[in-house]
Length: 232
Image (cartoon, rainbow, N blue to C red):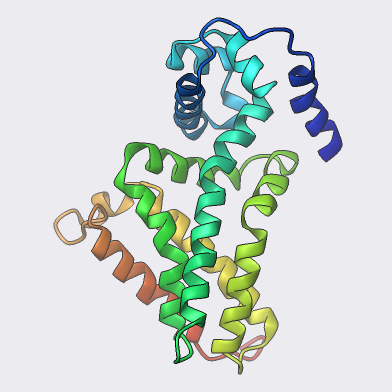
C-alpha cells in the first residue's frame, strides 16, 4: 500500500514538462496554507483539489505540478509542521537530559507538550492541530505512515525518558500512559469549545498558561499514578 501511495505522489512529478504559470516559491506556501485549513475542516476524504485551488486562488494544475496528487498535498501539509514539532521535542528532551539533575516527570511532560501548544498562537497553527486530531480518524493507509514518519522517533525517545523517570512502572503501563497523554493533549488543544459550553465563566482555554498548567498537572498525575493490579 505504501509503495502504491508513493507512486501516486511521485508519478505526476516525474512527468513534469514545464513550469506552469504562477509557479513561485510563495505560491507553494499559499497552497499548503489553504490545504491545511481545508483538510482540517473537511478531512482527507471530504477535501477536493478544486476546493483547495479556489481557496488558494490557483489552478488545480498548479497544485498537481507541485504535489502530484491529493495524497501528495496532504503529506506535505502534515509533515511541514509535524516534523518541526518532533524536532523541537527532541531538542527539549536533549536539553533536559544535559542538566545535572535527572528531569522530573513534569519536566518531561512540559518538554513534550510545549512545541504543539505554541501552534495555538496562530490561526494556521490551530488549523494544523485540528488536522492532526482528524488524522486519527482517517483510514490506516492514509494515517499510519505519516504519523510514524513524523512522530515515531521522538515519541519513543519520550517513552525511554519516562521509563527512566518511573523505573517502578511496567513497560506496558508506560506505553499506555504515553498514548493516553497524546489523546488528552490533542483533545485539549484542538478547539473543541467544550469548556466554553461547560464552564465559560470558570475556565479560559484560550489562556496558554492555564491550558498548559491544567494538561501538565493532569498528565503528570496519570503518569505517576500507582500501578493497579489487573482486574482490581
